[in-house]
Length: 124
Image (cartoon, rainbow, N blue to C red; front, side, top):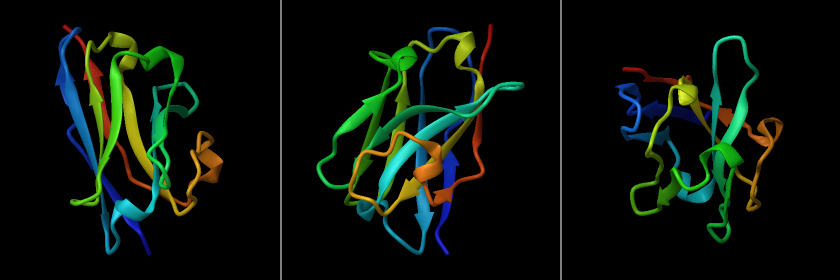
């Protein structure tokens, strides 16, 4: 059973930065497509960014374009979400998800494995 773990969340002031990390137990994320999703209180889970397994193509939801960067370090088997210029509207629990498909997976329903999430709070 693949288990994912997110880390790097916390409290940051508007305009600040955080880097989230996602690791997997027993497997390397080198072999998986990875997505980052978030869920704010009272709202549905939404895609933030994702990266394909086959060629490293990326997708970003419009509200993070130019501010967030998704990446995988295949030597470490770890995925990252670098978040810059954070806004209060970015406050949410952030989840990483992984899937064996080589494709770019934008829909949450396509992912087989999920972490438990890490809280990101943007507030002054």
